[in-house]
Length: 457
Image 1 (cartoon, rainbow, N blue to C red):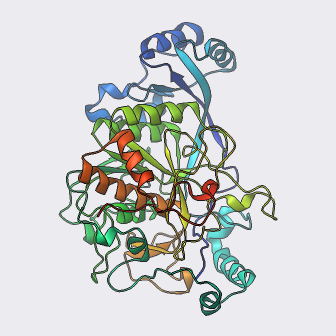
Image 2 (image 1 turned 180 degrees about the vertical axis):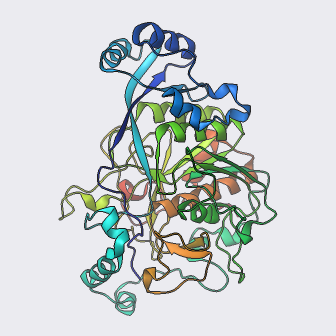
């Protein structure tokens, strides 16, 4: 078995859209919009999430207007010409109504990074098998050889449950996430018709991708929802953590696995206004410096009782080939107000792709969770970017094993729902419970934070 993940962020992962994000000082949104109007010619009539029921903003209106206002988050996405951008930058500062102006970026589903740095399209067009074979050869150990030289316990999938649920004590927990709302902001969910494992569940859905329904034709979102909120597969194997949680599906990444900040903001505002205690985001980019906007949004979410949990990133090996400059946590997880999740394998070793803490303030890994060869739900038929033969075995329709910090993140999100149920906790209190109850690992804190997440029993 390899801990090589299964989808790659394409080259240009720091791509911007040409629009800009404006972050407002607390309770200064109106003043800030007035400044944008007078100084930069930005219309005060931008679509406003507050004007929609439960903030379910129409994404097409954002695209038509070139931006939108998100009052709960305290940010706006705007279109600025060069002179207008200069004017906006001139009035930005921590003492004014406008804190910062930064580019709107593209974010990606984080379930793989190709350590050999080949392009995404080449990978999808058949290079996967060759890379995996090369990787296995380079590692140089068969599974039985590893067992001989490692003394650490190895957790395994069996007919009853997945290894990740064993390692995190989920099987011993008496909590199920009942009464807790979990939002998964990703590529959507298999809802047309609904995946058989989720029939009868409370599912609230909204697409924030123009021209696409919530239906997940990528597979990433359905897999993450399965881990966070699923129950058992059709053969009785348990693979999900919070099987009684209320599921909120926000499609913020396209079927191709990418999305703009505007759609992600729309999903976050919608989730917070729906009272979701947990917001799970297995998405990101390779930008090592934190975003002012996401930092402000994470802080506001905590104050409103929502904990945002995000993938640390899978680009550790993008640095020097000798590992001297490993990749660090990317946006949005590198904000101090958003919980960053690293990935470990079934021997509780660090996944080779999992990013480490960065030098910037707040860009630290906070916690770790199972993220290698994680079995969960996917749409049927298999999306084109998922190969049933991955990891050298065939999976039945509607299930698949994938690796990545994306797969670690929903473990933490589901367990957060268990703690929220157990202690009626939310926001900062929920964060504290997760990190204080984590099991220490024999690994650097820069790699795994407080340790392996553990469920309440």
